[in-house]
Length: 202
Image (cartoon, rainbow, N blue to C red; front, side, top):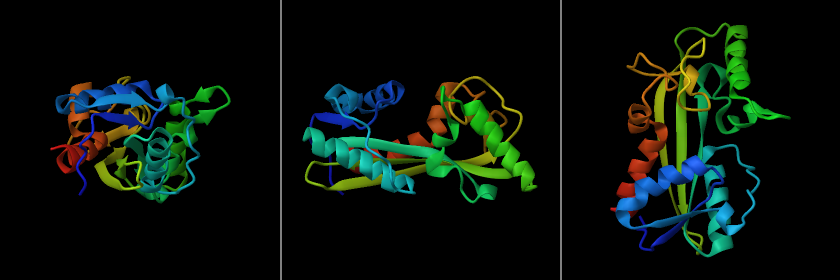
């Protein structure tokens, strides 16, 4: 596995929250991070049907365009009774002409589960894939997940995306109700980050 030995990493994302989260994680290693938007990069078209495939597209696009190592994240929720949907299309399910509406997307998932008369618990998982790519085309990929179930009605106004309907295994609060520090400590993204740090930074 290739170790990261530079001092500057491009985060292949235009999401300010994600940039801040990754910058904090990598601060102990003296790594400076900048976002794709700071380099004037457009978002590449995500044409793959897996988290790994789309993470690779984003990381290699940013690494090639900037000449710097780049880190991307592709994540979403997979619902077992919906054959893994929405999966890589998690954000797409929330798209409207007015922007993203995750309340609508969550309702759509629950309605589909009811129509299929899916048994309880309605198992699901949050998935996150990180890809660290170098300008020479090499990459390292790390996958994280947290298992749980989809519940209804929505609970909690913390978090984002599908958090209010995701109840992790062994917990009584949804990601939408949970203290952010508790959620982040056990999240799919943290799982992937821990593997990234161990593999490439320690």
